[in-house]
Image 1: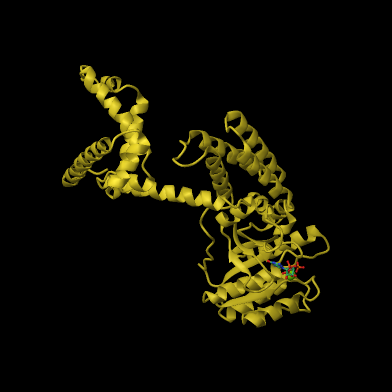
Image 2: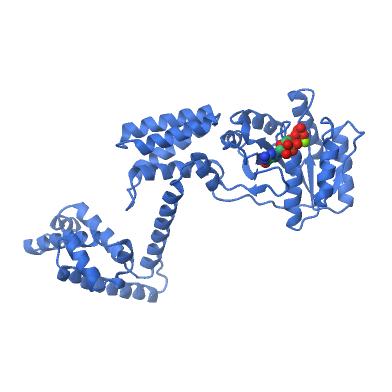
Length: 436
Ligand SMILES: Nc1nc2c(ncn2[C@@H]2O[C@H](COP(=O)(O)OP(=O)(O)OP(=O)(O)O)[C@@H](O)[C@H]2O)c(=O)[nH]1
Ligand SMILES: [Mg+2]
């Protein structure tokens, strides 16, 4: 197994088996993560930023209901890795100039020629007229390989097997394809050369003379962290706009992707998942990281977090519209009870220090009783109190050590508050110029 992935799995398993995620333990986990990322050649500054972010988020976040500390830390780790790999948005091939000239670069065997054909087919299916150029004058059979693939897909091909000057081929090819009225030109370049420096120099020459609109780096995902160095070398001579990560159908899980992204700042656009023309997929960072972390239950944790986020969004919308759920009431009461005795809270507001002792006490008792009642309710009941029938009320009373009458009292108080909230929201709407 790839070293990087193995390292990440160790971090994940340490999180899952740790007994107490206190500061000392989290620090140790973070240090381990830093080692793993640095070993994978991820930029030092970036490693520091990621790990600091994870720590800050973990310690500043309140534990959401129904989640364990471990799950929160795993989710934060997952989110940070997704962010590092370009976030949620998938790549979009934009043709803002016709023809758009795209050059594919990468070392030998990375999958340039195959990816050129795959991309040509992908774009053709989206309605673009595509032309491809074989600028590889080194690999025996390179010309025939791309010519055959082009004929198979039905895109226009340009190449000259007798010409040894790659820059001349590209120049002639661009002229030829412009005349054919193509929307996109894909240039397949060499991967073999006398040596690596000559290869990089040739890429620089083509890039300087042709000025491609986008350079795509093709990386073999099985090479692991060496991807970082390669990416850097190409990036220096022709700024990498995006990356195609190939051979992800094999055993590799693509730790090298992180290094390549880190070295170029470019986003991964596509992944290659097989040798056939259609084996090209838009890169999805979320899916990729889940696979990298290899956690069978990660998907479940993420789904639960998504559900929570959805609920939070709905609640915010509902509150703004003057609606109040029991869950909101519960949150409010929790906040109040964590502030200290009610009489003290009222004192803080001033002007109300003389609240009769009994009243304040009754209020406090009520708050803790109501919180106990609401603790015995399900999320569905808190969000939709209208489903609370007799049998549910009895169950809740039993579970909270109260009586059904107490539960009904709480519901009556809640209804009153809801009505007030609605009136408040309505009156606010009537006031012109007042917006929240
Ligand atoms: N399984 C798998 N094989 C791939 C993928 N992409 C490319 N290959 C295979 O990798 C080998 C090399 O692919 P090429 O496209 O010829 O690589 P190249 O970068 O053009 O190589 P050079 O021209 O020598 O520089 C071929 O056997 C391809 O079929 C992929 O996503 N999955
Ligand atoms: Mg090739």
